[in-house]
Structures are given as C-alpha cells and as structure tokens.
Length: 514
Image 1 (cartoon, rainbow, N blue to C red):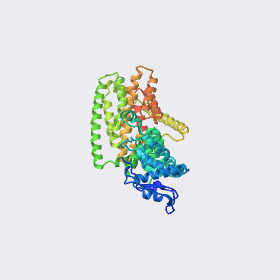
Image 2 (image 1 turned 180 degrees about the vertical axis):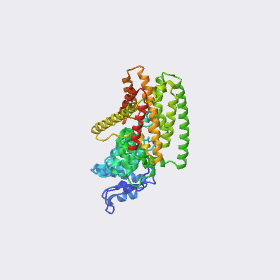
Image 3 (image 1 turned 90 degrees about the horizontal axis):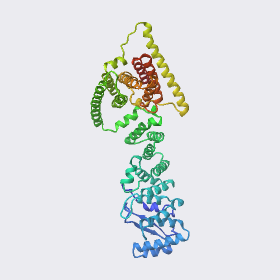
Image 4 (image 1 turned 45 degrees about the horizontal axis):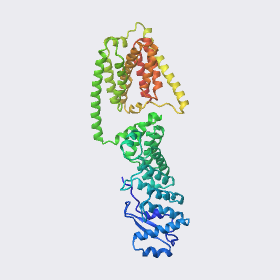
C-alpha cells in the first residue's frame, strides 16, 4: 500500500515561514510533486539581493546548489527554520546526496517550530520499500508518533496503517523468522493508536484498531469499552459496527460485561453475511453438525453400554462430561436448536446406560405413604433453599470484592426467548433434557467412578468442582454450589431423580429471570 503524498506540498513545507504577501527576508523553497517520491519541482524564493542569482542559474541543479549554500549560511547565522528545511533536501537528495540520518535529525526540529509535518513526510517515506532504501517500520512508527504527539492530525491515517503492521502475539514467531523485515513493535503501535484517538476522538477506525490491540494484550475490559464507544458514534459503517459487536461478544465473559450484551450484538454480526448465503450456510452447518453429533453420540453410547453393570470407566466418563458442552454448542444460537440437541444428548445418554446402571441411577418411584411422597418434596425445597442461599452469599461477596455484581453465563445471551414458542423450546432443552444429561454424567457416571476409589463425599466434591469449571470461570463457583447440593441429594436418595428435578427447576427459573 502506498501512502499518498499531499498535493499541496508548498503549503506543508512553508506553512508559517513568512506571510505570503511580504517581501521574503530569507532564502526558502517549496516542493511540488505529482504524487510520488521522485521528480520533485523546487520553487525557490529569495530576498531581492539574491533573487537575480537564482533567476540566472543555468539549470535546476545549479539553482539547488545556490539554495543549499544559502540555507547553510542562514543556519550558521542561527536561523533554525533553515536547519529544518535542509532536512527535506537531505531526505529527497535535492542539491546534495540523500542522507536519512541527517534528514531525521533536522526534521525533528520541526515540532519546536510549530511545523511537525516534516516528521510525517519522513515516516511516509520510510514506510515504503523502494530501490536503495529498505522499509523501516519501527523507525517510521517512531516518526509518526512524534508527529502525532506534536498535534499533526494528517498523520493519523498513516499511524493507523502502520499500526496494522504491528507484531501480533500469534504471528510473532513467524514474523521474526520468516519475514525479512521488522514489524512495528506492539507497544509502539498502541502508543500511536492512543495518540490518534486523542487527536480524533470520533475516529471509529482508530478506536477499533486500539480495541483489537487491547484484545491481543488480553485487556478485555478496555477492549470492551473501546468497542462500546464505537457503537455510540454517529454514522459508523455497518461493517465497523459489526466488528465492534464481535469484539463485545468476544470480550464480554472476561470483561465481566455479559449482562450488558443484547440480541443486537448477535444480530448485527449476522446481518453482515449475505442473507441467502447465511441461511444456506446455517442449514448446511446445522445438518452436518447434527449428523456428526448423532454419529459420535451413538458410538459413545455403544462403547459405554459395553462396559456393563459397573458403568463406564474413566475414559468414557470423561467423554460424557465433555460431550454435552461440545455438542450443545451446535444448537446454542436458537431455542429450537437447543431443544433438538438437548433431546439428542438425553436420548443418547439414556441409551448408553446398561439396564443395571439405569436401575441404580433411576430406580422406580414408589411411595408407600403420604409421608414417603412428601420426603422428596421437602428434599427439593431444602435443595432450592441451599442453592439460592449460596448464590446470594456469593453475589454479596463478589460485589463487595469487585465493585460490580457477577454476570450471567455468556451462553445466556444467545438463549433468550422472544416468543412463547421459543420459551417452550428453550425450557424443553435447558430445563428438561440438559439436566438429565448433566446429572447422569456428573452425579451418575463420574461420581460412581470416583466413589469406587475415594470416599463418597470426596467423589461429590470433585464432581461438583469439575461441574463448575466446565461452565466457565465467572460462573464456576455458583455452579459448583449447585453441583454440591445435587451431589448431596444423590447421596441421600441413592438415585438421580431429585438432582435432575432440582437442576431442571434451577435452569427453568434462570431462563424466566432472563
């Protein structure tokens, strides 16, 4: 990509040197170009005493030699603008041999004269590869930053372009070993972006690039803030808004902002896809995903059933623990998908159980008396009370510690129901089928496998901890509390009926609270 050279070079080079209508008191010049870095036309201005010498010079080269000599005399007399302007001649090799080090030293005088545009010019020059001059991005970045720090707004576009060529964590090894040049250091790129945002607070591109840089640095809270700031700007292109939404969704969990996400954060991203292509791709992906999931689940169920009455071993148990999260993700974006994938999981895990294992985990419900029927109800009430008491205490501690309430799981953003039909499907998937799968996997297979090697309370504790971890960092502790209560009910009753019902009630209440 070429950085365009401003057409009105004279205005840039000579701005503030002298009033336009006044008689020149010193030798100076303006540069004119057709937009490239070669074939410069130099127009000299001089006092009356020296004007004839410039006019009578036999060639442009001779005129340039006169001008360089005059600028050097003026510099020796203490004229700092002459020292600055000589930097341009060193940069482009006009009237002397090109010397980039000397050009940089002289152009850095410019900000002190209120003329930082020279740094912008040199940064532009060093950002491109050309015969005899290698591209030097770190040096160009430092010059662009200096121009921005001096308040030179035209350097913003160059700074953004340079920042996109920064070292990225995922590609650092490749860039350093396979690319024959140095990319812009990430810290320098971020300083450029911050200065660009300071000069142009409403520049959506600068804000987005800075948000992307903050994501790479794992500063998710700042990335969220910058992306949200972009959405508040007027007249932001749809593509930029979609990218800002994507950053919000990507950083919400770790930034502690999940509760602030909305359906627009998903819809604006999806809207960027061609409607027909998105629909076809969605259907094809759903069909392929469902078939693949069904095949894997059928295989896993067959292997698990072959283990016999003792239940699955550690490998198959681990598979059931991880499978439900992986496959449930196939249908997470729509309540119907959640219901279908939840049903698939529930059917598969029920088929996976040997009849003896099923009888142990889900014994027939028989109540000899009213008191016998009331006992499970009291157990459920006690379990709900324990769960809500634990979550209330957790919310108080978390809020006091962090200064904000804990967020919902990120999955909750996508599982919102807009219609009654969506609510029914969502409840079927999340409050019926998923509890069957999770309780069978965690309080069933996993707890039984651990109980054969550890004490029962240790088995419940470990399975609850894993249950919390698999639901994500933010929700890990409260979900582990649910696992402890469900494990306690499993130990008290011997089966999974009460844990499944309690789990379903908790999920159903959470859906309604959304």
